Length: 125
Image 1 (cartoon, rainbow, N blue to C red):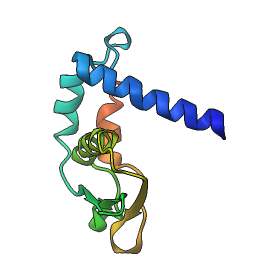
Image 2: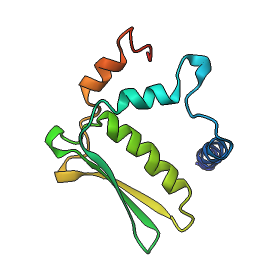
Image 3: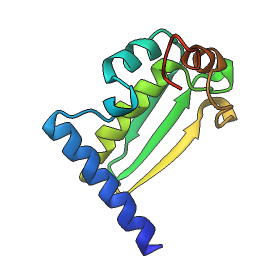
Image 4: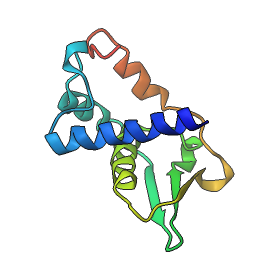
């Protein structure tokens, strides 16, 4: 368990370092370019990732796309990245609850986005 916690802490530090130095989370050596990935994901709107930060240090992250059983849209994937970065910088944070809107956690990813990203033209897979 301690080893797992250390791994998580170091990942957070690495992510912070990447952002501070202006480097990308996407590796161009694998053919991924952050702006291209973001542009493609933005083509799949719907839903939102909502974050409440309580005074007691508990965050509540809500997957909010109930019409699709809270499936992740492309825009939601980008919002999740923003919320994770926000949480990494939340020094008062002690814990996080991840939940789905309307009594459903998540059915996964919007298959339209997955199909689009999986085409040879997209060059992401």
